[in-house]
Image (cartoon, rainbow, N blue to C red; front, side, top):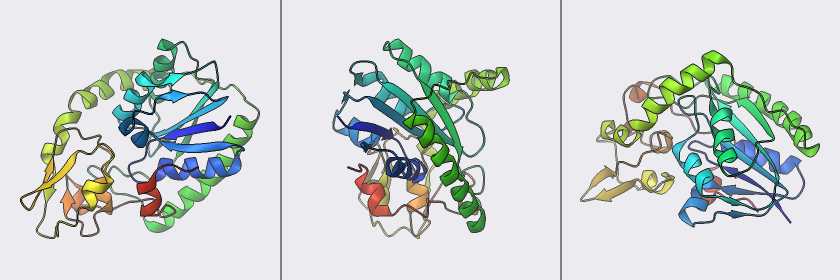
Length: 261
């Protein structure tokens, strides 16, 4: 029986952590939540299950929430999560734990790993040398996390009051407005209609019609289309002034494939 790591990634960070962790642990396969949702692959019968995701506005991505609500987890496995974040993990652990509790399951352990921030619509991404430092530190953290998972350690951290207040206020506002975010995308004359943005969108929210890029109001706020465009033709808010970011230790081919057997 293989153990499984499920991950969601917009710009390669969660995929990188999943890949490194699977290399360190025994008998783990890596599955993309994007692929699982698209293929209705919701049944999991494993001894250990990992869920790795970025923190969005102090909570978990909508697609991850939807996946957890639909997954059928057999028996009572050891379930762990890794939240990767540029600033704070907020209420992500608390939110995931609540979702699992509704299914009669327990989040056995949670871990947080700082990764390069990709939210370029508001903040600039780190410079290249800082990115490498952050990723090197992440490698050290993955080794520590792997030892805990090997030993099936329980370390479910509570949520500090100020993080809980922030999560309860900010995350619901973000989620309510999620479907409206792609109305503010702009496409410059640099666009050559290559279709990369359509291919990388994890929820198939982008179409190309009559020579125009069209968003269908199902955006995840993941930044993939902005970050991967090699013409830097797609922008939203402040992103046109900021550096693009995609995890330099993940190839586009790996990102597109998703699963690691």
